[in-house]
Image (cartoon, rainbow, N blue to C red; front, side, top):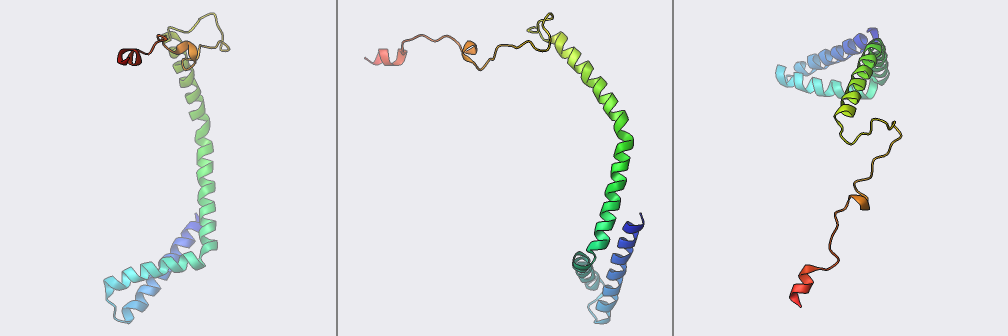
Length: 129
């Protein structure tokens, strides 16, 4: 949390400093605030990359730790739900062979056995002759 807080304080301090300087030049409070925000954003992108990277890495590490703590419960629940859904699909599938294992292959519906039978003659060409 320290790198993120330090980066935020430095950016806020940069904005306040720029806002104060711009108001001294007589730009007005609102316009000085907007310009200070834009200028401080650009300066932080250019010069505060080490602070930003340190804050981002710390944030990423904390996020990964939270994900690791939650991952065990979610995976067990997800696997249990998947087995229930798989069992329900097998019971509802009329083409499933209960004696066949997981290695049983169903006929490919896109293959030639799945095509309808057509007559050999072309009816449109025969009518026009």
